[in-house]
Length: 171
Image (tube, rainbow, N blue to C red):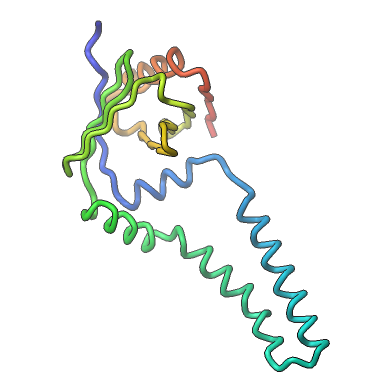
């Protein structure tokens, strides 16, 4: 058996922001905004018709909702969430890939190991790999984590062979 392919990267709020950029887009937020916007306008109109003095409050719901949605994944918010979850601002992660699976070891003492059979999906992006593991764990392994392009290509090859739901998205 060949030795594992190793990589190293820094995990931080910026790393999480990059993960969010790499994930396939979902239109769920658009539908939520459409629903909240429509409900706000309808409620304001109904309260206006009944001569209620507070009808204009519903018109303020939409801008407030937009602000909350926009700041939810801001770098400041991600930094706060990361610091709360890990107690650190950043940590180094060493990743190892072989025919059996992959392992992530951080300098904070967290060790994660998954066999390829547990991985539900892998997406190859131009800048790295998105690995979907059990319990809704999504791991972003940047291409820059590897010492060479050949190491990254070897990891992609191992993932293609061992994960049935492998997708290459080069954009």
